[in-house]
Amino acid sequence: MDDQKRAQEMFGQLTGKAVETMTVWADANQRVLRELVELSTATAKEGVRLCGELQQGALETLRSSQSAAAHWQSAWANGSTASRRRSSSWKVRLKPSRARPSGFSLRRSRPARVSRRPILPSSRR
Image (cartoon, rainbow, N blue to C red; front, top):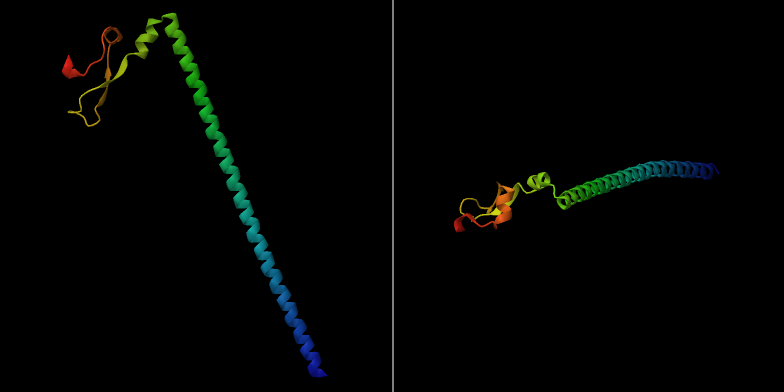
């Protein structure tokens, strides 16, 4: 009978140790999953915040470009020569690509000269 009692006690101890081990593993898994969920949540919040900031910046840029376009349109409609001078003082002209590989250059030109005759490449003048 002593052997049977010892076997039952030993079986009870092993069962208790197995339950403790499973409890420790379950707690560790729960902590890891909690941290993973917190990380995922923080990442999602940061992504949403960044997307909102980008959209806000795009809307502000759109508003400012619309107001600038309306300003220049009204200045042109009213015949403001100062705004015409400012807006047409820089022109992009196409040149033969002998000197530069890009073929384009930014050149300052007078508004009166540009409005009287078409812009031609320098070899045709």
